[in-house]
Image (cartoon, rainbow, N blue to C red; front, side):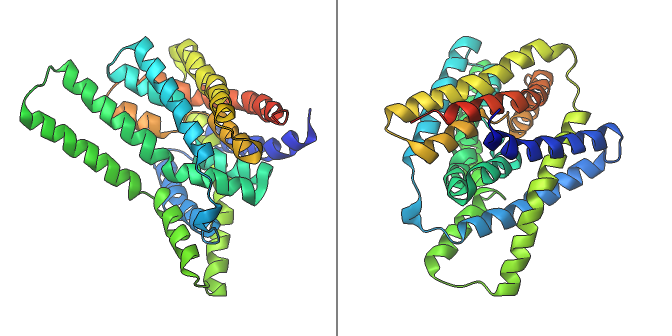
Length: 316
């Protein structure tokens, strides 16, 4: 196997395995998992994201690769709705087919494999990822709920509008896109961060990778797959293989080449993000299937990411 892929993926696999062992041994469990998740998303991730973008100027950002990603995701989302039906279950599974774990796994993997240049491309996607996909899913889910209940009154329509506006606000005022935006604004200001502050933020950011991947392993150990493993395998295959294939085709058609295309394809090959599970809980739809799909998708990604990363090296 290509040594580049091994050197990039092996630390990711080993850290997830260490977390899995900790979860199976119940060294960490119950309320501690939620606390660890809060530590990652509310402290470590913002530090990493802010510092990574604090030296990037807007003119360095490239949005065509991101457009290719979202066009492919939109097509897959629409196709899933067409097959599953315009309902809550169809919308939740459509989100599962398109929403990648770009933060907890993607940041570490792309940083190891493609360096700072690859991180800038990925963080451009991450800054819009939740905003575009989660807001779109909220709109579809609220419309599906309204349709299921045959709601036609103006009051209910206004309520749905408030929900969508709230989703837009929450997608922006969020511990992932907010530090990216703040870092970009800081970079444009021309200010220089005091060395002790910069070093502190750097150390917090460095802690993100290992802690986040260990958390992925713990979550896997505590997630039951049960009788939904066949459906979960289908969902995982669509997310881990079909999604990156569509991104590659759309990106190629739009003229995206080189590292930007590589990073977008690898981002699409990442397993299903945990936020999909939160959506399934909120709308009480396909909860067991989505839980199993997140677990199976993450496990399957150890093999499928290897294949995709080998494949993208052959793209011109």
